[in-house]
Image (cartoon, rainbow, N blue to C red; front, side, top):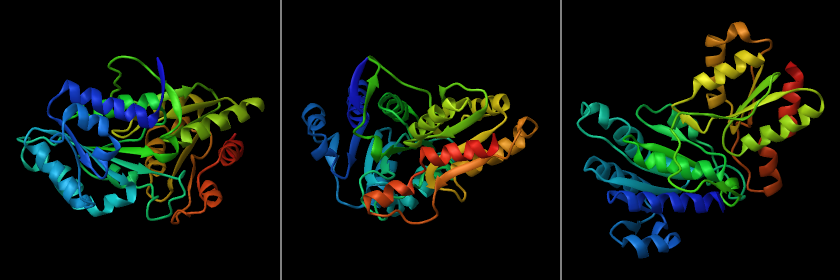
Length: 317
């Protein structure tokens, strides 16, 4: 085990995959500048800066993937994905199906998301649910350095387009990362804490929020299980359902706004498949349906807090 930040873990994952497979290439906004060590090792043909044109970057990646390459593209902040929706949604996401399986599109799109840097609404918008709603696209959003590395490696090896959302508040947080070829299957959640009275389900930075809330609740005699989804599509329904069938209560937590979010989908799944086990209504604790503020204190208030999670669990316990 070694200690590194999530950002360092991503860089290490990319370098390892480029060594493993000569078809892996990386390009995007500032990729060669930020990752000059990659340029030195792999050359300018495989690691490139691009113009600030997200549609061109994503379209080039889709075309490169169709020819057998495995592009990893960096579009910086998640709201910039709106400039590449046609290329990601209508091309990368659909063309494998439209080709009758003749072509695959193994491309990874990295986008930073969430509060933490005070960059304002045009750079901070949690859009992950948009892509969960997109056929043919997988979506991951890790919560710690080890998973940043493992899921990026798995995403690069996947034969489908994968959206890799990096929570900006986590990028410079250190964590322990296993040595060797550390990979995780896309579509498998992790139980971060076991409990018997309520299930807290989250992803990204709010996993830590749930763990903090679980600690507070434990002091009051309430045992909470904490599930880190890690993968939003495919979604690990089995792990979530097993936990809620055991505890009988669920609180779904994420920074993205509530309407049509991942929490809403989970609530529907629980009502359809675990209704008989529920002892109380399924609750959501989410960010507001509003643009993110640039002020750092307001930005922190924007994100679900441990206090709000504790209040939600107390309401149904």
